[in-house]
Image (cartoon, rainbow, N blue to C red; front, side, top):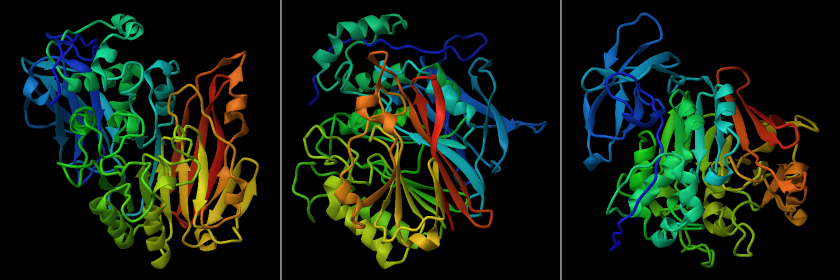
Length: 499
């Protein structure tokens, strides 16, 4: 049973509405992914209020309205309002109407290409949002790329750093934390539990740059260990139900396969199937011996993924995993390289790879976070590895040349103090059963991370364009990283995969 403690949680909010009432939003609305002609928009307020959304095409079309929803403390002053009967690949305007004839400003977003048909879309992916290292406004940079959506692949906040909510006494007695937050204004909440600490953590991370992006660019998200609750956490984590409650309060509605368990789900954009994994809720302890009884996904989720990949007719099939598939990423605090990622769960990883090989499935692309540096690997490749073209800054592959190889891309951190890598295990590079790395920038190595004698902020993200409408169908993957010298986001490497 969770012991209740009388606490003061300090939050901030952005004034995003006008009219008779002020400060109705805790933060600006957050747009979700269109599925079946519907788009969810997450609303969070600071007081009990009745809301609905007015929306229309970005022309002279008449307005449509969602149903009214009353926000109370019972539903945590949070709701998803569904915009229905939307067209694909169309720009829409929307605004939130509060009771008493009070309106927010107008926002705008674009819907994605029609499901089930060839199309073209792009997205940005990355992970790791630690509050104390967010001096650089990476979200304004991302917004300038105008992606169709942004995939946040875990650690959207750090519950166990900068005040550890797993030890509430420590969390609340962190003097430097209180001093930093006191400048943001305060809301007093008495007699609350660890849930309030989770809520406070999200509120401290999602500042103005993030809100301006998320109110107009659809978001896809999953958690990893730190926003799930604790470093290297697994299915035994004691607060996972509380973590899930607050996760659902902080992101647009997703089509979860099991609402009462892990938060994995599938979406389809154009004719591309996307499988979003939960690598924490079901996982066995990472220090267990690898074998048939050790799991990353749990039996149900694993079978769901295997069936989904096997039955998908998509030319390219995307897997979003909060931890990398390769053998190099993941937490090394245990002194066992990669034990927190799929390298520590090879028995289950091999089931996925075997299904792909046995059924001659091509075009599987894995995008992951957690790794803290940008990299691209090719898993289960067959020697010799043939490239269509290659230079110092790019490489292109044809699916016909690489068989059933699975690509594993990792781009993280989104906003952190360093983008660090470790030395390659060169013997693994010669083993086609493990992986083949095609990129890791030298300046991201730990020994080169200092400039002017101090560690500098950095941000890393991947920008992906998928085009199944053109011939040949093509995926273009670009890495971008914050250049410590120029203080600009720079393209560092490009990978092209053609059908």
